[in-house]
Structures are given as structure tokens and as C-alpha cells.
Image: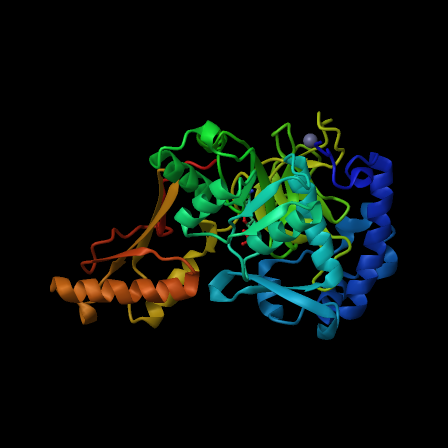
Length: 435
Ligand code: ADP
Ligand code: ZN
């Protein structure tokens, strides 16, 4: 029997009760952060706001924002709000200029995160009778560990596959009759293509649902994956700074993702002025983690452009919904689910003795991201010997892989052959149609 909600009382709570709960948590959280994080205390002091000024959610706008730059400045321990001995886990993601974001978790934080993922799995129809194949990357990346924990909480038989090794994924999926697949949408599409090539029809595939996120994907892509795998595909959203996937999840209505707002309070702001915008406006999504202990983010600017809606949802959940992110306010690219900043590529080029004359070309071919970088040879390293060029391309690709975590195809091109722009250089050509 399908269980509709994982934590019904929270997921269907009335707006007034939710606001009350959020307010109580916020007051405590602000005090916790002020008392334990000198970095944030300083930000609050500079803004002239004290914990006593925060009586509830209506006062949230008085608090200063946190940005990725703050995470960089405070790396690694500067935003830690609990003694390290109370922390049980870190997860990490690539950040600007190559410095990683390291997020800390107490056991309470891990639990809360896994509950959020369990809500997502339940909303996708998951119960303890399901076999849940987790094909997100494990390790530092939040995808694998988050969904793995959620799957345990729901009581599914969990297949901790991690990503890659597609033949083995398919073998386990078929032999163990996996019913739920969790991975990035591009990997789901790739698994789908491979199954098709191997002669499987949708009705031969035991899956009934998929939970796909960590990167932008379109409704067309959703329909294509649904048709190939014979499933219903659900979106899931999150970021390492707030815990990982599960901050928001899709329900049967498939029109936006419910935000787990008892843990993460969402605001939409004008990215230029910082002003909070009314419901329904498009702007930058900002999250406040209301009860995370070790690494609480107050008013963290995600840089994702988004819209919130409180329209009644047919699934019965009252949690506010966010639209699919509609773009970013910075130049971050998400390629094969990995965050890539052009500045990281520049750093590698400079380290390897090249000039920062390059162009990134991203495309999506058969639902798979392609990632190429054209790099000009400098006069100093110029050669027209094919074997030397190939060796140089290989070595540069390796250096990029070390920095970015994914492998680009490098094309070394003649000096001065990449067209120069009068204004802002066109560094990125993204041919994917994601929005
Ligand atoms: P994750 O582990 O979830 O990928 P990261 O911290 O590496 O987390 O990246 C977070 C960013 O990934 C978000 O700010 C957003 O831009 C993007 N993202 C995550 N989930 C989705 C999604 N479902 N749709 C679109 N973008 C997403
Ligand atoms: Zn719903």
C-alpha cells in the first residue's frame, strides 16, 4: 500500500502553524549562530542587528545575507557553529576559484537531511516494499549519501550503486527488480538509452519512478526519460550549503517542488538590491536553515533564479513550492551534474603555462553533456607536431580533471585564433537548451 506522506503532520500543516514553528526555530537559531559563529556575529554587528531583534519570521529581513564569498573567506571552519567533536560528517562541492565548500553535519543534521530525502522518496510513491537504486555519486558529493539515507528511512531495499558502470547498473536493476531510480537526469537518460540499445522495452523495465536532480533539466527531457524507462520522473533540488538534495522535492502533481520549509525557509530577493520580493516574483532564491546545528546558513544566497508559489497543491501538501530554477546570477555551469566555474578553468590554464585565451563549449548530445575547451597555444609552447599536441592536450585535460572533477576534451588551437571580443569575453558557449 502506498503511503502518501513521510511526515504528514509537517507536510500538511496549516500556514499559521507553519509560521509559528518557523518563528520559534528562527529565534533559537539566530541566537545559536550569534553565540557560536564569530564570523556571522560580526556581520550582524556591522548591520546593527542583535538576536533580541528577531522575534519571528517577520524579522528575518533584518539579518545580513551570506554568500559563497563568505564561505570562501571562512573556509574551512569559520562558519562552524558546533564543536568539531560534535560533528560526524562532512560533504563537499566545488566552489569558486577552486576552493571547495565544506559542509559539516552533526548526527541531528544528518537525520534531518535524510528525513527530507525520505519525504521526497515517499512523494514519488516509495514505500518499504520498494527497491531503490541510488546511482548518484557517493563520497563527498551529497547526492549518493542523501538519497541513500532517505531510502533507509523509508525502509526501501537500498542499492548503493553510486554513478557509472552502466552495465552493472542495468544488471542489478533487472536482477533485483529495482523500482525507484535516483540519479542525475542526464545519467537517467543515458541508462535509458543503453537499456533501449540492449533491446529492453519500457514494459520490461521494473522501475516505476525516478528521482532526478542536482542539475537543470527540461520538461521535454522529463517526458523522454519517462517514455524510455516507463516511469514517472520526479525532480529534486538541493545544495551542499543547505545539506544536499531534498531541500525541495516534487510530488505527483509535477508542477514545481515543495520546499521542506520547516527546515529551510525560502525568500525571493532582487539580486541587485537585496530587497525581499512578494510571492510570485522572479528573483534570487535565499535559504535560511532553521534548525541545522553544525553549519547553519542564515539568508544564504543560492544564486539560483526562481519563483515561489503557495497555490493549493492536489497532493495535499501545504509546503510552499519552488519552480524549477530558471538560471543563475553567476557564471556557474553545471556539466554532468558537476559545478564548473570558468574561473577554475582559468586557474588551471595559468598554472599550466597557458594564457587565459579559451572558450568552453557545452552541448547535450543524446541527453549527455559534452564538454570541450578550446585553448590557444602560446608562442612559447607552439608546435605543429601532432604527437606533441596530443600529449599536451592529454596533460591539460588531466590537470582540468583534477581541478573540476570531470574530464573535458581539450583542443589546442593556434595562437590568436580565438576571436577577441570588444567587451566581455565570450568564454562560454552553452548550446544546451535547458530553460
Ligand atoms: P548538489 O549536490 O545538489 O548538486 P551542489 O551544491 O553541488 O549540490 O549544487 C547546487 C546547485 O545545483 C543548485 O544551486 C542549483 O543551481 C543546482 N541544482 C540542484 N538541483 C537542481 C534541480 N533539480 N534543478 C536545477 N538545478 C539544480
Ligand atoms: Zn504537491
